[in-house]
Length: 313
Image 1 (cartoon, rainbow, N blue to C red):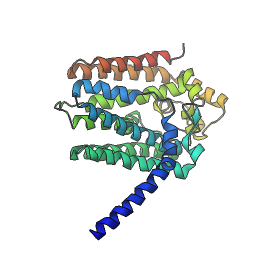
Image 2: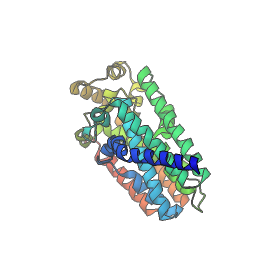
Image 3: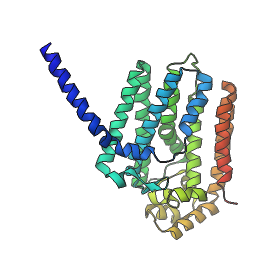
Image 4: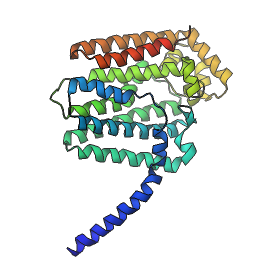
């Protein structure tokens, strides 16, 4: 038992060391977790549980795993997008620096994997791996288009969003489904939910006034991001004005307001709104096929109210 004792001592010192340092390690994560979010993920989990009916312990675990992945991915997102503010507060890497923020976010990813593994389902681990790969594929495309100044087609953009935003939505639903008797196919519904959520976010970033109190004005323009309305405007434009503005990564509000006016004249906002109504229609059809779900209907109602509320008179 000599070896075992030695190993045990080593583990104890390691864990003793970890406890003290865990706090330091977690600080950027704790910081971002304190910011007020939109809180859609816990609501979605509760809504899908109307159909999946899994044990409360599973719900709790999946909620925590999803929340960790979400917050860690926000920390990395903010670095990749060079963001200054998130929900009106300085982003984690402006407070803790890029190296620590990056390391913490990656640590949290693996911690989440460890929690998935602890659920004891090999299928759950497969789901985690598959969706985390999807998330990074989508994110990689988004960054590549932005940094190479390549405007994607609407179809390519939607596919990217289903990988990226759909990733964590699918992850939570599929993790729950590993422990459910209900083996219905929720993927088309979840993909469209991710698409609706992201395109609405794109729309609000450039349209809603409330959004600008939480983020710097039209942040997607400054970031140079080819968001849904921008993809429409650039691909239908008669000249290169908007494409050029985007390439300049504008920080000047007057330039950004000018860009928004160009998009308005191009009909990109009303097009985006119509597109969202179409996705909403598909969502309702998916939901009818799967059986009544009041909680999910309520979430969808809130989202479509947000769409109405964020459009300029």
